[in-house]
Amino acid sequence: AGLCPVRGHSNVQGDRTMGIWERPPAPFLDRLEAEFGLPMPRENGVDVAEAIQSFVDGTAKVLFCLGGNFMRAIPETDLAERAISRARLTVHVSTKLNRSHAVCGGTALILPTLGRTEIDAQLSGDQFVTVEDSMGKVHRSQGVLQPASPFLRSEMAIVTGLAEALFPGTTSGVDWASFRHDYGVVRDHISRVVPGFDDFNERVSDPAGFELPHPPRDSRTFPTATGAANFAVTQRLAADAPESVDPDGPQLLLQTLRSHDQYNTTIYGLDDRYRGIHGGRMVVFVNPGDIARLGLHDGQIVDLVSHLGGTERRVSGFRVVPYPTPPGCAAAYYPETNPLIALEHRSPEAGTPASKAVPVTLQAGSVVQSARLGARFVQQNGLGSSPDEGQ
Image (cartoon, rainbow, N blue to C red; front, side, top):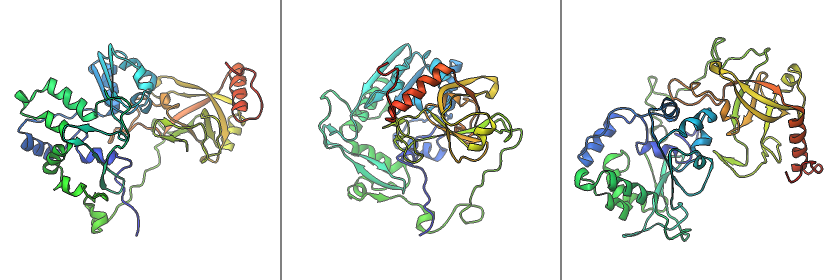
């Protein structure tokens, strides 16, 4: 009973458990060195925002993505796309195409891979991978469908194949092929490197999986100064903070959010049953008092404009929707509004983009733009036919 101490969502915390971080701790690197007999890099890497900045600066030359939709998940989209287009090489290991594949470096590669729903047959037999859920439980995931193509390789096969070419076992001492032929070999290494994964292969054979140690859940113990769970309360924004807005001024504080028909950057439909939106995503939710104060009206088409750092960032064609947001605040869907988020506007501790605190002004769109978008909305919602139907 009580609050659930969630470390993350989806398999995000599973990645971190396995050491996927730009600042891996020294004990983890020590265990890797002991396991493989190789020196591990001790310099910190870069997070997402820092990676984009390195392309802007020209210090990064290669973008290698293991899945995902990088270009639609990041801030200041327009700047990032221009910068990454100057890379020497972009590589995407993918199960399906998305916008990121169209932002190409000097050489652009797409490496199709098996999805988790497909059978992964290797020399030792059909393979499975493991995932960690939000409750800290690890279980196996094994595909049952025939691969879409006999030429598809698994992510493990692609990565180990690259490793064999770049760091052959004759020089690195690592038997990369053994990882590819039997994923149990990888789990054996994990069991000796990552705490909580002792006897990994044996424990994951249980269809129910196994639970990782979690002191708050297991023993009600907390590694804090008070020995108890602590709640962190965000302070009110200082008046001179870059993201602060005058509640009586022309700016609103915008947060970006997901719709009901959306999972991360994947959009499954144009409806949002949570907020009563149907047939479109180009909307901005605004407090009714702010709509009146700013001289706007329900259904008006506006541009959203941000000015942080003296640079104007603009997205166009958003329909004003009255919604009980806090006065002075607005909301709109991402990734459509990601171009408004300044690359440098992020948490100094975590590096997380300030997607929930973007100062914006709402500017009326052109009459022609408003007419076209309004007619399209009417058509999509079954309220009549559009004069530009078919365009």
